[in-house]
Image 1 (cartoon, rainbow, N blue to C red):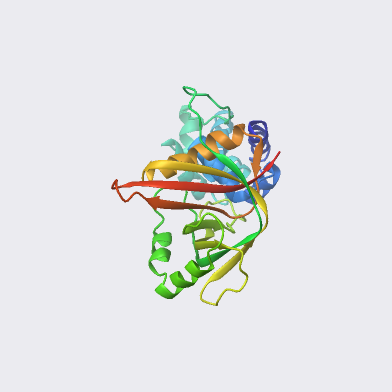
Image 2 (cartoon, rainbow, N blue to C red; image 1 turned 60 degrees about the horizontal axis):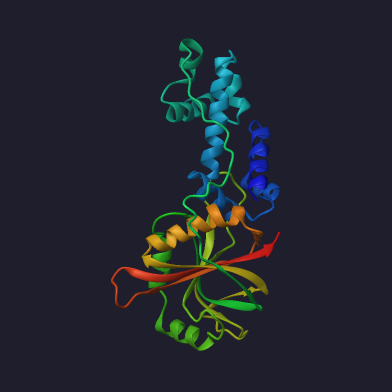
Length: 287
């Protein structure tokens, strides 16, 4: 997968002066938009849109140093007005585009390339499971895409689940894991700004098809799943496991992510405050 990621970096470089959408990039990468953004974020520490903006402004800085006009450079890299380009450039660099041409000041942001560094021979625990088709059933809501920190909209979703909904979910639950899960799917992909939404569902797994109107149902086909357990301080241990899954395991494994809902669950430790056991389930296939 590292080879493919570096090919995507080459593709982005070729398209810096063209219209770039997240959908085009993920299609070129051959992985769903949401999963590609997660892989990129956990590997680089940047959102994809931040990276592309930084590369465009870095190349703009280079063009200005070579004597190109500010107006020409602004339009070359997709800015619709001089004011918009000037604000973005000053925020990024700390100085005005005109300072580059007049004073020769400069800032750069180099193209990324990816490699995996093995640190201390630390192993990552995971297992592979084959699962028949099932339904995710529960309560769902469109929430903002957010890779770090507490998503307040998901907290609100959990708080609004009624006793009647909990009772029906418990009655339907008939396939492992027998836990309350959180699933994410249907992420927005049609624009470059990473401010879109995805659907988040809190519920259970079931093979039953008859579900009342008080719950949402999402069919999931039979897939192979990579399962990543973690045990430790919550949510730190879960977040670290998620980050390592996308930044270390996926790029170096023989598997690739399928465009289907992923899910996780967490069980708080009754005997150790603030600690929890969690599992992250990701649908995959052999490359």
